[in-house]
Image (cartoon, rainbow, N blue to C red; front, side, top):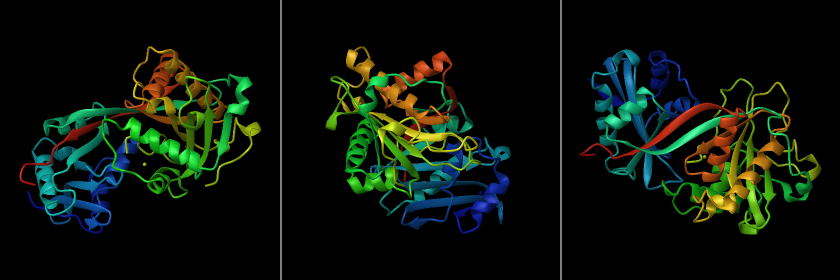
Length: 348
């Protein structure tokens, strides 16, 4: 099967032969199908049955926050699947990485749970690493509690040093199974907390003894502005990716700040308990208190608007909260993804 480097315009041709992506992760993965470049570092190839009639593509791209591994995405038109084209494309794109900084790196693929993509990755020898759930909490589903703790809630600018330091510690901790590289405050701010990243507002919850970690902080939330016609659940991956408001008297709406016509607000919700070495000790009183604090912050920020949060298996506190909300019917699961880890093709 003829395979060549992907060039300008091929992404449009691929859109004509691929079925519409059914998940936000699918849309994001397809964004890797662009011409090879060195900044950002990406290698991509396309397969054609005849000139200008593609049947599939593959790409491997650097992961700036995780310099010891790279993302890979392989996709073949539905009617062509099962004939070996996917493996040919995988072998070809691995070969294209020779002589680059991504040559030989461990690979990561993010696919919808139970999908053909997951089965294909497993056939290549990839193994499950983390599970990600995107869940939706309707407006007002969690009536605000803990009214006596209004003084513990702090609305901050997304670029605040306190928030950025906390985010860095948390992001490093919840990626223990997929280690990040040495990160600077500036890298974290640019990737997750800047206007370019879509960060819209932020809130901090200071905790009581047992839940507070660095700087007395228990939990934080960062909101991301969204367009009304976007598909729900497009948070930056916690296993990966504007001025805030002020005044605790606006705690119930400060981060959300949207009209009822707009789509659900996306939140990254983090618990500083997850930075502890004993974060997986779900039996402890401190763990239960950390879950309660995270729920309190989520309740405060979902009073007037639906909220979507992304939860990975590396986030024990937020996972426990999500389990409880889903079991009670308070929240609904929109998507479930698997991130798999694998090796490049032999000879790459």
